[in-house]
Length: 467
Image (cartoon, rainbow, N blue to C red; front, top):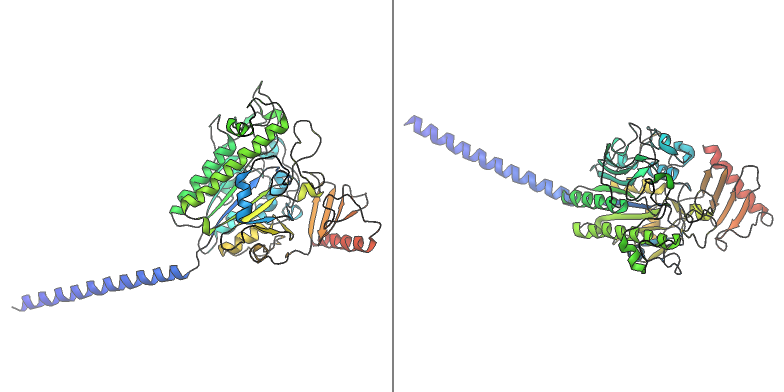
């Protein structure tokens, strides 16, 4: 009898404990769910770069442009179009290093274009520099990170994307590969992670868009915030050293891009072929943006698009066909055509659709924007040249920059407010321009505005001293 009562009491006690455990688990789950709902969801971040796209190539910047870019036109209409956005350097390698570090070349140390196999497969950017994906990995909710396209800041061991904070990488080490055969200077130059990837005949912008779409859809389904860096290698000019024997050195695009204009894929006019290349790039950008809708994350994704530098205008026959209208000169110069680039930002409900923003911003600002959006902390003891651009983009506030400083090779420039000084050699006098009325930098006011010239010279020296 005693045994039966004890057993019943023990069973009752076990049932009570089980019920209490279940209730505790349900309360804990509810508390976690409530906390997650109360915590602001961190936005995804998509940064897309074009390669040497001209300021005057897009209709949204130059209505007279004959190039068909419906997706970039739509992006400009859905978000903000920036008309005074600058790259921190007028050349591919250095521009990308500035974007990834939030710092000007004179701070991060990579001041020249990486050249040849030795340069592109060397260390490149100092491996101690902290890049955007590394910062986002340390966010309160760590970001998934992917890079798909042109790297061009060093590919030695320790310098490759998956060793610098990116979970995934499909792209090339160099600055310029053949779009279909993925050759650079006689070497196969297409990688997945750190291993060679062979997909001969695949158009590289399409390949990079495919990889980005796969990353976006998979990561979005996992409910993890993500950062996607999509540096297209288009519309960079072709190079004979990157071709197979007997292959013509010409602009490359899919047949469909030529057909849009009524051109034959065998068209020989370099300018017409360039139109097709830019249209093909626009198509791939459109596919990536559409994938945000498919994944249901458009509303919670900060999208920023810009060109790494302006179109080259070096009078090379068949190669320098992009337009920087109405700006002066182009890539690898410190005139506006080399530094001021097309840029668009979209974040539905946060950035006003159709806005046109003429405040000074530049590429290092994107590291700061990414850090703020992710909730991550910046490393201590590092001087950043980027500043928070979000108030400008979301509330049309004034620029956070007093001035912007540029040095490339022997050239230099500084913009302060609407005024700019520029020189092509250190031993030459400064030229002074009022950009509010003279974006083409035609009327040098150095002699007629000596006080203004002195003011900008002092500001340039202040930057030099800070270095």
